[in-house]
Length: 226
Image: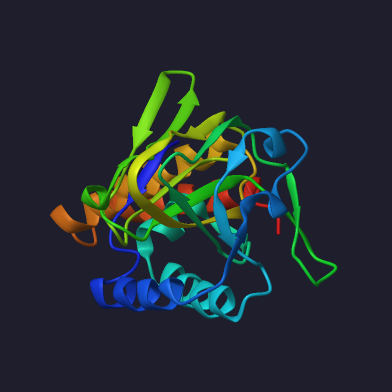
């Protein structure tokens, strides 16, 4: 499932993030690349230990915890501390697959990367090129969203960032370990949750809604791992 999630950050929060990022110190993005990605990656990144990265990462995680669409789609167990990258003119990230397991820097904790997320921090009109292209069974999906919006997709997907030809592309990227490891099961639960919410809107307290909610939670109980 590939899903665009709108308004993760408000315009004021995006503006705050941009001010902090403009004043931050950037390093070579290959510092977090795996063996395969090392050959394909060309961008700049905030160091994981950067106070700005930690401050803005906490802002993003707090926003995600309040976002019903993200919670329904991801069913998150753990969120990797958000990272930040910048692509200037001529930079890109070739086709790759994310590492299955990520170590949280400075801690003994590891996270299984079920889902990948890119949160756009500048608008499509601020740069040319730089589209995120995600491959799945149905072809290649091209993503370039407004500032403050986020795309969520399986981390197992082949994906790349097209070359930026003008301007600069700013984004946060991170991974989620879901309570539901299987993408197909997670998608079924998301669709069922959306159907229940729609039924509640058109017919509040309908007995079918109660039954469907029971089915949802019984499936979640069957499939979830914590």
